[in-house]
Amino acid sequence: MGEQPNLRRGFTLVELLVALAIIALILASIIPFILANLEASRRIKCEDNLRTIYYALGDYQRDFLTYPRTRFDPNRNDWTCYTGTDEMHPFADSSTVAVNDVTASLWLLVRIGYLPDTATFICPSSDRVRDPMTNAAGGRATLLERGNFRSVRNLAYSILSPFNPSPAFVWNDTLPSDSALLADMNPGMAGTRDEVTKPLAHDQPMTQAWANANNHAKAGQNVLYSGGSVQFESTAFCGYGSQPAGERNAQPVTGDNIFTAYRATPGGKPLIDGPGDYGKSFAPTWNYDSYLLPSDDE
Image (cartoon, rainbow, N blue to C red; front, side, top):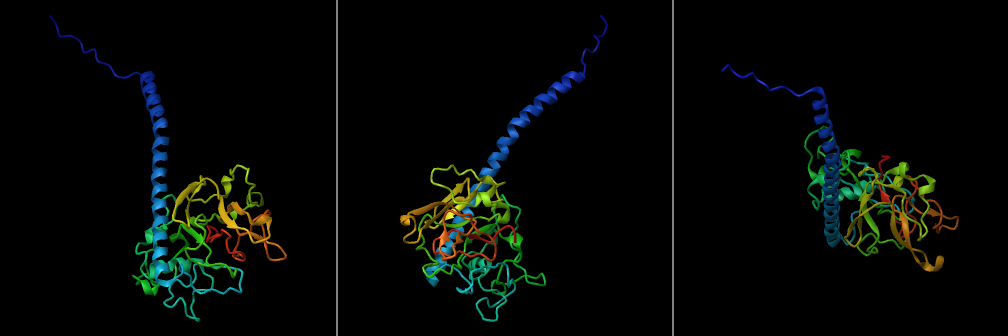
């Protein structure tokens, strides 16, 4: 009997297309799951960073009886950031660290050694990178040779402004436990359109996602509260403040935009039901105003 012919054949074009379609469907169903899990892990890391900074703030306060704050001029209703990067004497009158510098205040945690790893200031869902700890010439800098972050790209979080000129404001752990203390970075003007800066009525759903931080693709922000808890909030309207005596029966405010300052009335009191203000010429004017700085505008 002769040798049998080889009956093997390759895939037809139709079979190949069907196989590719099946693979594409599988990938389409798996990739969102993978990306969601990656983002979930990034949020957890971001939460850990905020809690680590919180512990450093507590250590600083135990030694200095206050949270870190550089030179403060209570007569100025403004703030600044990222000044005096290579300053060795941030508290001197001649310091290149400007008064009311929010980022220089946060940098004190690194400068004095309460927070040795600058990567803690970086949210893994952001485009920021850790501070390289270099001097102006690009060489290695010691902690005491630096007075601020090297670049705006080296910080991914905002902190409650320590430069509140209200005489009732105290910069320590006596803040109400549900006051926002740190969060993913303020989006700046991109999140402060007039229609989103109006504080919400208590019965309104908080759906203003466009006011959220940019770190998590505007899905929300991790917020560290003064009591030490960290929550992923789907809206920036999660602040708290006790209203001044005599205003609306001094009931607590909930739903304050943590990325804006309350607008002051001509009499100097906060306009609770009006739009918030944002910018370097606006500081919190009232002891419990949630206003986290700096922002992505810088």
